[in-house]
Image (cartoon, rainbow over all chains, first blue to last red; front, side, top):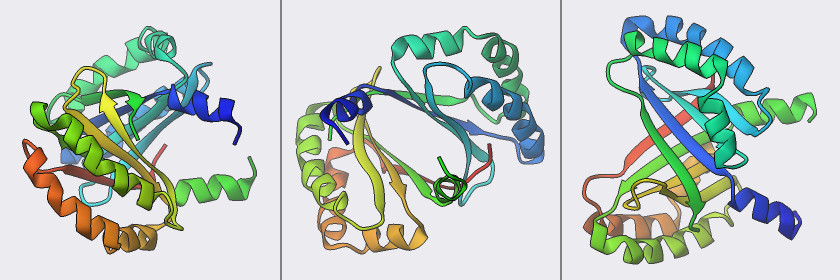
Length: 107
Length: 107
């Protein structure tokens, strides 16, 4: 990997968005996320955007994301698919989505 | 990316280990993690192992990890550097590390 490639990786934004889904709503929630993922991965600044299920708790469904920079994240938050689909999440969740945004890789 | 490369990525293990560090212990905690990261990235099954600081809360210091498979994770948990350093974390933390292990990429 070149020095420039390493630098680009250090400057990306990483997002971990953890959803605690009601046990009887897991399949419906995954269905809802499908369109969101399909549209989001087409966004220019999206490096990774995938839905993962926790090994020991199938109700924990987390989006692991990587974005080129902060403006890419903001474009995503203002995209039609985000604004249309994410407000529908609440009825499937036991509590609000926990969103952690990591800008700085320390080590 | 070839089909085989895509398949390998789908089968990796992703770990998110979130530490809530006491405000006056952040620098010391980072120092403690330095040796852990340096040794861990040398492990054969380690694809990614990096310490990230949350954008809006500098006390949230999270290890974002990717491992080739479950046996790589187990080797890591039994490594000398893990067993020596991770038990020292507790004195720096406000609460226990929240560890989420994701095996299955759904979307």
